Amino acid sequence: MHTESVLAVLKTLQNQICEALETEDDEARFVADQWQSKLGIGESRVLKNGKVFEQAGVNFSHVKGDAMPASATAHRPELAGARFEAMGVSLVIHPKNPYVPTSHANVRFFIAYPEGKEPVWWFGGGFDLTPFYPFETDILHWHQTAAAVCAPFGEDVYPQYKKWCDEYFYLKHRGETRGVGGLFFDDLNRWDFDTCLNFIRAVGEGYIEAYRPIVARRKDTAYGERERQFQLYRRGRYVEFNLVWDRGTLFGLQSGGRTESILMSMPPLVRFEYAYEPEAGTPESRLNEFLKPRDWLEELA
Image 1 (cartoon, helix red, strand yellow):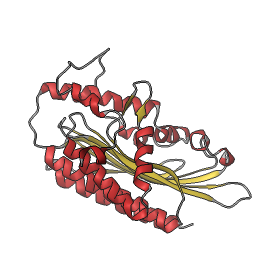
Image 2 (tube, one colour):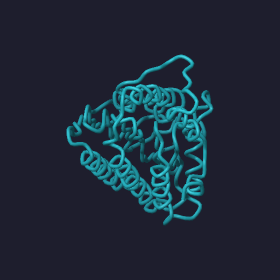
Image 3 (cartoon, one colour):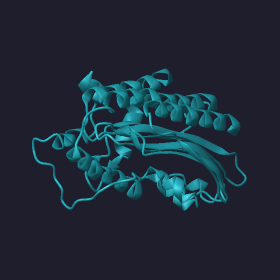
Image 4 (tube, one colour):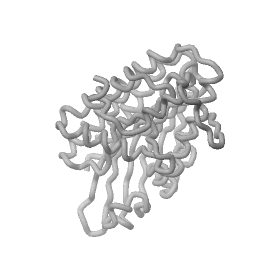
């Protein structure tokens, strides 16, 4: 299997994404933290206290293990106990300005080696957007870019992976989506290896094309303490999802991965408030209209 070609794509994407985000921030740069654990190696790049980004993390990891973790075999019981190799780039961006959405993306590759059988490989990944003060123009651009990424690979790809994203990034205990969605896919081996690899490259590059114009449009918008406090409160939902529902977090912890890198997605500042409900008719209450699956291309185009 061509793991070297996957590694080359992932490292290139990490460089491209960091360079694009640094271009939008005048005051901070990513600091690289190369690490090694009992499972493998990685490089976590973190930007802190920038003019635009309060904290941004772009993590690369390449790990191997003697037995697939339970989180990875829940829907693949035939691979339980198999040796595995996993590599990926995962990122979460927490902007300082409440009018700039939080964003997340990842692309990953797994290969399992079941005893006495052929190796089993698949890709996964996607990107999603979590605004606090949503703008229809931003959401439309985000989904138009997602659709353009998928278009060369088939007419059914965007609708399928958009729906999967809505379903995956859903806080069941809150009855709301984490944000306005994007793309999510797993178990990707529907095409040949090279086509699947080209797709995750397109997803990683598409994330930059989707997110950077939104940052540029909103990063200089004036805001006050009210908007800041609402941002910190809504960041709590991000924490809830990542610690309660996210399979990637669970996989990392179960496999004995590096804790600092696994929890890099946590916002640097967050607040919780008991039974908070935004006052009706306020900009804060408007967010509720966006926290449900919607056909954004049909509604906003």
